[in-house]
Image (tube, rainbow, N blue to C red; front, side, top):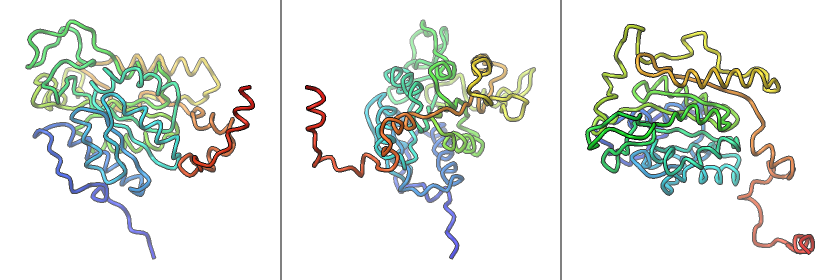
Length: 311
């Protein structure tokens, strides 16, 4: 008997999504569900982890294991899940305030480790849940409706930060193109290593500048948003052992990440195949991949050899 194909509906729960009307979160949630359907992953083999903020409710709406954790802590929680149960497909989700503000240290160190998981950041330049304060991605001199004055700090470039931190798959998506974003998410999940996608999204309540109409506009140079896979841009490092190529591709990607305003690139900016953190663990513990931590007997262990070694 043929197996029944999973559809996006199979990854939806009965919990009512209650974001504001027009919020880009709906498009991202739809994209996640479409991506999981494309990958045909059984729901019981998926875990979705979130921090605090509007995006934090995402695990409630995805038919999979979910963990709604603390502010900025989605990545360390997701890392623990993946290392304890390598068979899980782990997605961490969070907002730009959650991930690049209080979670910034975790963001940098997750790139260094290269654990096989995917991190999706819902980037609307404001702290939407707490009434629209400037998030770390709002640029100096810009102002949003709930701010009394323009921002006096520089905004960070999360793509450039991710590339320099060691992420092995770095991309940018757009919330209101859910089918194309779904394909990008599926590509990120297929990548073996830490994948990161910064997803531009609308916040119709607090971001009255970068709206659906602003992103959809055409400029003298063409459509404001353009997909890199529609061009001859090549994000892939073809020989990871060649340091010159690695540096050249990183420099190319960082340069591309600073395109903003009239033309904004969407898609994969940088990708490289490197050993994962799990590979490193397996080198020192050959049984790591065969016996997940969740299946080990943690109550009846002989610690005497450890005590003897410390003496």
